[in-house]
Image (cartoon, rainbow, N blue to C red):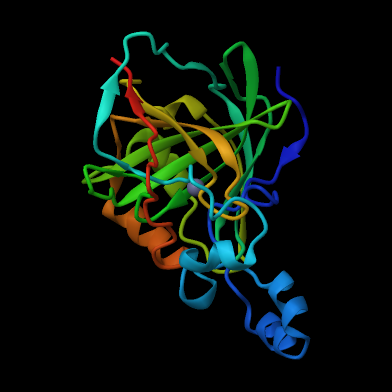
Length: 266
Ligand SMILES: [Zn+2]
């Protein structure tokens, strides 16, 4: 059953993983108010004084925490007890429109897609892109990643990362999503089409799993990460379209493991 409310993909406060660019007007306003007040209002970005290396200084939250994301996936522990992911995505999720708000791209869609983990239901709240990928595998970035953010009723997060490799043709998921790109800043295009959300999941569902954080402020910890081993194909056109639409390098650098173990499903 599909619920009828609209989910604004990147509009949530927690959503965020696509960047929020600091606006010049806000900068000017901040300069006119006392420093303490200014710090409170400082908006994070992907570069300079408000970039990832400074988030912990001015953002409330866990950005300075010990168990952060993304990480480099280097050494893994094969774990035969890891279960296949229990994904309940619709084959006909209604996507209403796509919006370019100047710092990210939002596809607005109906709720109802979910996964279960440990008997608990986590609803798909939003998906977004990073370019390059945030997680690296043996030190190497992929040209793009799609993050699917799920939230449980009790407020816990589980995020899927699906990497993309450059190819001549888009995979079906990107074929669909790219069909509405590019679009100019502040432009909104109606989609009004159904999308098979399962197309975003690679055919082989093996994954790496570990516990980390949101990769943008407030960098909340306790996030269960699942990074699919198999990438999807993405065309150079889509990479270029997204590059033109999103802030350059909208990814956070890899964080120390601090003793965490990355498990690998078989
Ligand atoms: Zn993200």
